[in-house]
Length: 96
Image (cartoon, rainbow, N blue to C red; front, side):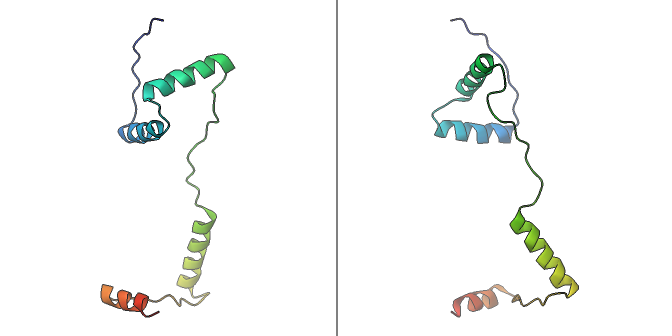
């Protein structure tokens, strides 16, 4: 089988993450793209679900934001401890 060189441009960070993930699966970037290309030809569609990264905060983040706003507005008391220096924080954490 004759192969033809193909150039793919990837963001440096994406390439690092991709290489790390593929390496853990025993695949190279070249192997992955060949695998994906063959599956596209066989299946006549993109062989995986295409997802977009979400900028939507998680439920836990939403709750934390609401609680912080409520404390800021005085709706609920802010009983969170505050510290002026690291030693105060350490003493608070060690008191149990």
